[in-house]
Length: 83
Image (cartoon, rainbow, N blue to C red; front, top):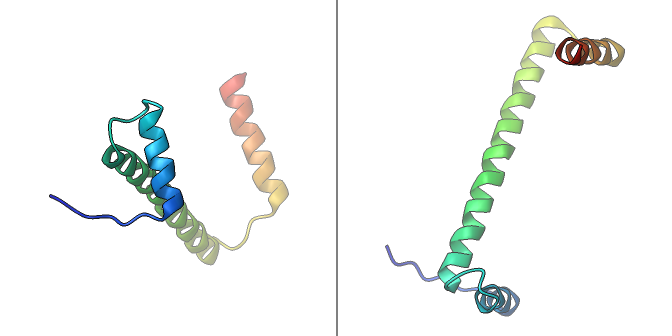
């Protein structure tokens, strides 16, 4: 599928520089690489938002938890894995 992308002068120069340095064969590869990074970042963002929603639902259901209790539980988990 052919798609035209208009880049700013700075982005065009950056993409061409990446090609000139031999890191990519052409500007299209640079753009695809950038889009893959964006795709990964969006997946991490979505996973984080899902986790936040889960924590919010748990807090609504079970009530808040003191930070000291959370830290103590984290220490116990680490100690169980390490020791």
